Amino acid sequence: MGHVVAQIELNNPREPDLVPIKTKALADTGALMLCIPEHLALQLKLEAESVREVSVADGRHKNVPYVGPIRVSFGNRFCYGHLEK
View 1 (cartoon, helix red, strand yellow):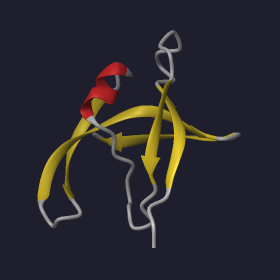
View 2 (tube, rainbow, N blue to C red; view 1 turned 90 degrees about the horizontal axis):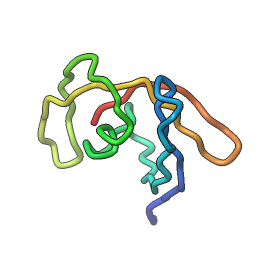
View 3 (tube, rainbow, N blue to C red; view 1 turned 120 degrees about the horizontal axis):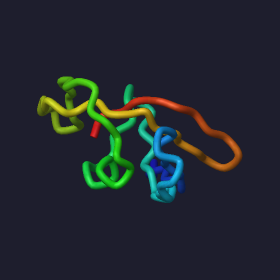
View 4 (cartoon, rainbow, N blue to C red; view 1 turned 90 degrees about the vertical axis):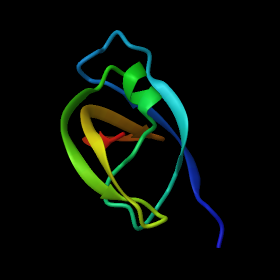
């Protein structure tokens, strides 16, 4: 079974003057949260709201910032949320 990758657009609804970021995202049917690299969170000026412990695919546990809000667009659909970076 192959990987599913999609082109998505991310933006910060609190910073409407920032240019949205288009990036590729790997779909993970087992994921509970959306995770983005730290450099994208910095570019979007997302604010850290808390720190959460997550477990990653190789079994390690890490404490990561929980940031947001963020608008995620895919095709003609979008949603708002908070995420881990």
